[in-house]
Length: 534
Image (cartoon, rainbow, N blue to C red):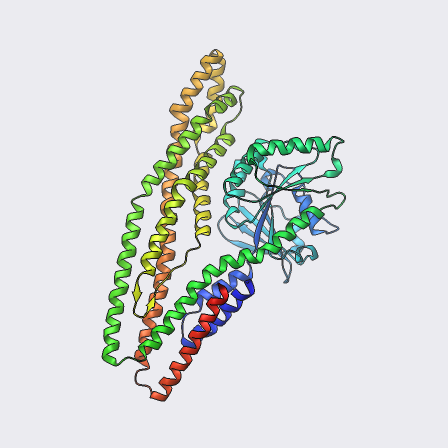
């Protein structure tokens, strides 16, 4: 099916070029498809064997990825196959990029404060078997919950599955991993649990393994999980290789489903042009004047209807934010006992509160906001599709799944960022430790509860709400801009068709008849292309 998408774009490009229709969108999509990969992050705690696992998969006699990195130098490392020259790319936080020769990679040390991620492009025999899969070696979670956020927010929208590593000599499901597993399940993300360092397993491995599975169920419930057992020292990664090959087998269908939805509106725009050109060529000059005037009236009416839909939906944003705030408030209050216990034990509540808020926002956005977005998009689609412009129908297709994933990730990311800069969380343990010393135990607990309710929770809610409202507004505007751009593209194409008809009005009849035959033939071919993608 992916090959059909590529051929459809190539044929459409030739047809557009023949009639002077812009091929910019087609060229951009062809370039995107050329580099499209299915992302599979590898996550786990420091020293869980992530980098060693990837090195073993690569099969080099000399290690490609460093296995003794520190939190300060830990950044996501993307590994992909290339048929071109090997190299690595450094993506900086200021959105600039540098290309480096692969020979320099083993000596390269990143600064996590300035570098967003690195992409390593290898002409590797093992990667050649999974050319459409991008492995991502993620930093360990002990480097702070901002890494937790990055693993989800930066990679979730483009990922098919997550690989989670546990070393055979330490199969304890810590909260740092448990919370991210819980969040991934909220997004229905497939999980593969990989036991690394099996050569270090104890005699009671099977018993410990079963206990680990029981611990995992607390976070993932009855969700089906793939398990793989590996040993980098022995070069044993067959289970994981089979899992990655399965992802490769699915990748073309996944990518085809994505791009089919994006190609169809481009096809329909060209189809509309040809229909307008064909029907207009049969008109007299006075009929053409009348039709042109009607076209402009209908386009203005369409703009007005869409504008009303936009305004009505933007008025609802404050309601969405209020719903999310209430859900976050309830989630923190429900977890109050745990937070109090952590503070009484002198523990920082930052990481735990981060997970509580992230999960609450994720659930709330999916429950309260995304259904409203879907209804809005359907109303817009209905408004556009119902509008007959001349002899054609303007239409618009939405990649709803992509929009939803992007919205959830962006809203959750800004909520988590609000916690990172919340000054209360930095001093809260110190304040409560003093309360614990100066009060009897029950009095201390009550004092802590009051501070949580009166200071911490309201501050969190306030910071999270501000960020969420700004982000939701921005996300809706981005969706509206994409709709406006598509409408403008279709409108410009229809107007070009009318202008082209007027240009050809004075041509000889024989040439006109030949033109009509060419248009009909191209319309027939476009119909075949559309049918092939359905």
